[in-house]
Length: 253
Image 1 (cartoon, helix red, strand yellow):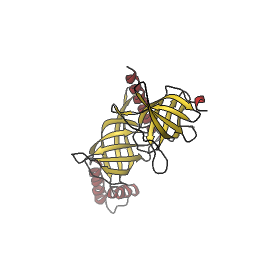
Image 2 (cartoon, rainbow, N blue to C red):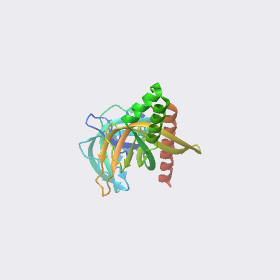
Image 3 (cartoon, helix red, strand yellow):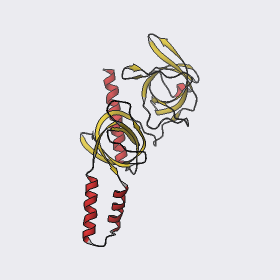
Image 4 (cartoon, rainbow, N blue to C red):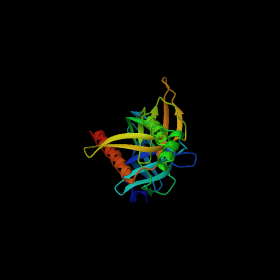
């Protein structure tokens, strides 16, 4: 039964599902709360907020839920049945439509933020030059020096952007520079962990690119990390959960 794992008052994260019925990898996370059990497969949750505004969950649509329980993070899918108002609070009645499963290690909590960053695109030319240097394929010292000089030029070509959310598996950034899906890049991310400044240069690949509908030409890029070490990933996850813990404490003040 749901009551064996869930308890009233627990925090709930809500994400939209993609066309395959999976939680959107880079989708926005909305925060809600479990307020009551209706029956063995239906619960009431608070209509989530975003920037102090109510986010309507559409009746008849399915969503992904992640519950913060005493036994860890548990997830499931749900179907929104109807909305009710109780004590001036808008609630959604949702039917649990999948098994309640413990969050797997391969899945990562996403932190929404505004964090200035810099990044650089890795071009095909740079990759070819890196390959030549690694294999030492040069006919003369002069040719090698020219290649290394060109590589140094590429390594100094940083662009500015802003991280708008990040997880142990990827990030979303905005930038005024135009790139395309499939581009490879290095993302520079610095943060404080245990009173120590950490600076990571993370290999990533753009999985979607979108021009945002605002006045200044701004692009939004969703990316996944590639070749990230377990140590870097663990430190990044620790930082994300520490930030989330601090936010929850501030909300209680």
